[in-house]
Length: 405
Image (cartoon, rainbow, N blue to C red; front, side, top):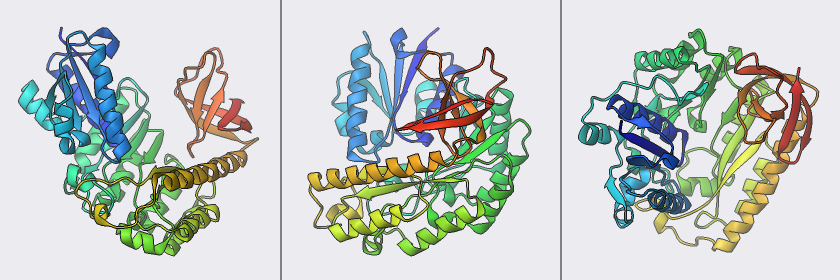
């Protein structure tokens, strides 16, 4: 039997696409194996959201090629669309095709599967509900590589969720390029909440302008939905937000966060922030810092601005130097560490239901709470299933420790 391995860079949508490709290859008669097993084909799914992501993709492609005695490598994903010339120059790459559908149709000669049935044997699965974005933020290349928004039908999504549950998945995380663009988001959320066998539901990153009261009301009343929201901020300064074409003000963003926390006081809120955007002055960075410091944001994903081909921001003047970007990034990292530690400390002594994930540390497992706190614990002789109640004992640096309750 022919064999294939997969390597994925980037977002949850890429992880979903890789799982879909894995099932397409299996449908065509391939066996999915590790790269260590010298597969006949290696598929690499790439990211292009930042210049660093493209660098990591090139590095990863070369690493996988050098591991294989007779490499046949297919490169797909976002970087395969904008970096085809650079990728094609890497010796050992045979096919560069950004569209997973075309890999199935043109290379495998197989019909397109309507969805996935498992997620690599894991109890947690990502489910794509839409793809594409037409927001065209001035720094972002994604609309150019993912195209216009396209929704999956409610019927297709629910059929996929049922298939995943039948194959052992108990946690579903909705994902997409810009899931707030999904016209049926609220209806999909309501239908998944009804699926027997789903114990936890999460919603991926969602733009602040797409979060409606009706969605918050339903999530608040659901016993299954996680208490974690990832809401991109990008900047806390209104002039920079306008240059980014973000279509909201810092005041409107903060107001939304307080409204969410008022409904769900135990929820965690994550945010994306870009430092070093062209024209970002020191006082404008301080506006971002102060908004984060004084808001209910629990943790940050921090990006240093990098020019992306074809975007409006590439022509904007006064981009801060790399050292300034690095310094601002480090300042926000420290703030994020402190805020996340303080949030976790609020739950010391409390018993929380956790999904169980493996860890590389012998004798330990990780439990993930509804608000996405990862809790390290010593497992009992036998686990009752994929979920367990843990009492939070202490927070030390980045680690949270608990015990079975």
